[in-house]
Amino acid sequence: MAAEDQDVTQLLLDWSSGKSHALERLIPLVTDELHVRARRYLAREGPGHTLQPTALVNEVYLRLVDQRRVSWQNRAQFFGFAAETMRRILVDHARAQKAWKRGHGAAKIPIEEAIGLADQRSVDIIALDDALKTLASMDPRQCRMVELRFFGGLTIEETSEVLGVGVATVSRDWVAVKAWLHRELKKS
Image (cartoon, rainbow, N blue to C red; front, side, top):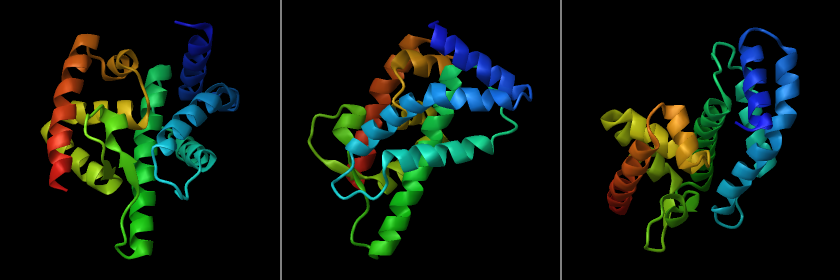
């Protein structure tokens, strides 16, 4: 584990144990990586997307501060939380935009970048969220894996750590879930 990863993990453990100063020291260590993940995700959005990476990261921080009952374990768990939070924020934003536009279309994301599909098309983020809700009812772990990989930008290894399963399991499930999502999103 790299020194910075150990620092993040220790600060998360300190914060979980009630040391409020730990959060103040943690934020500068994770800000750059959260911005990279937010920029990477938002780069997939169409032109004219109204949510900026800094706004997305700030919203993640606001929701992070409300997480007083989380027993933080490590850096990967933290970025897993960030991935789930980014998903919720982006879906809420897409729904608000869709409502504002009165049905003129939702935010589109290039799904081939997200899940490695060959055909060049975009998908409605609300349709992706609906598919993930369906997946969650069938296999919550696979749904969480998509959140971590797609919204959080975690690697197979980091996803394995957060989920507490082997790298081979994540790799195998990733292939299966990409095919399933491809079928589901073709329906929308």
